[in-house]
Length: 300
Image (cartoon, rainbow, N blue to C red; front, side, top):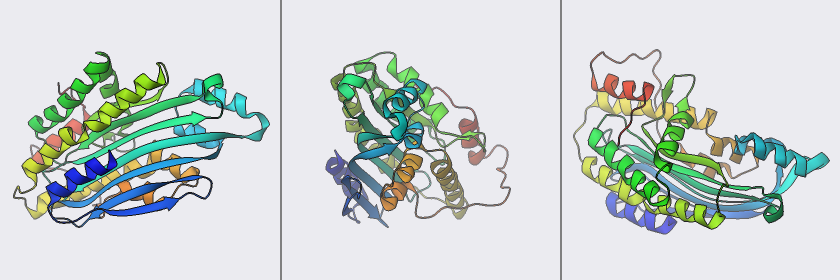
């Protein structure tokens, strides 16, 4: 999947190529991070694959999951050792286009497994794909959400509504009172079915990334834009940074478990902007998308 997504992005960019960085984790495992930078279409695009294992501190488990039952079970199994043997496999990506009318996209799909999980039941899947535009284009957002609804419906007709609402909650920038973008789907702590069935669902979600996202960027990569519109995109990139460094579960988990910093922070844009007490003009396109961030909508 990593190579297929990178191939599609390189073809769309038509200039820059992904640089691969293979790395080993001192505590066990490693990964392969692929990053494209300063392209024709993308300021930065990255796809990271990692498989790590070793001993996980309990405080890291409480960051990796919000399920109190999982946390309680982990504490019970760890006892006085305060750590548990673990295995985590994940693939994640962030795409930051240059054009303000082409949205940023993020996905992450992961599997957590702990020692003797077949006996102790301590395992789960998590993941999702979400979209972060700087300007509102309802057709684009409906295409993105519609494609993920189709994937969800193939597995369970209740998934899309449930996981769309979860994404709206998860991607809240609480100190701003707004979402990072227009969401998509998000799920976590999922261990309520046969693991093979959850894996198939996660794989189908991952395989849908190119279909959901690439046509939107292709549509807008050559749109004309002004300096003001570029500045607004940069300010929204600043909000993206705020969410990732303050709230994102994958970022905080990676940093607390001694993960590779360059790969963890791959999601951050190369450039961002903060203006003191910036206010959008009433009735402007910036105000229009900000209202969507403050009041999440149903798209399909």
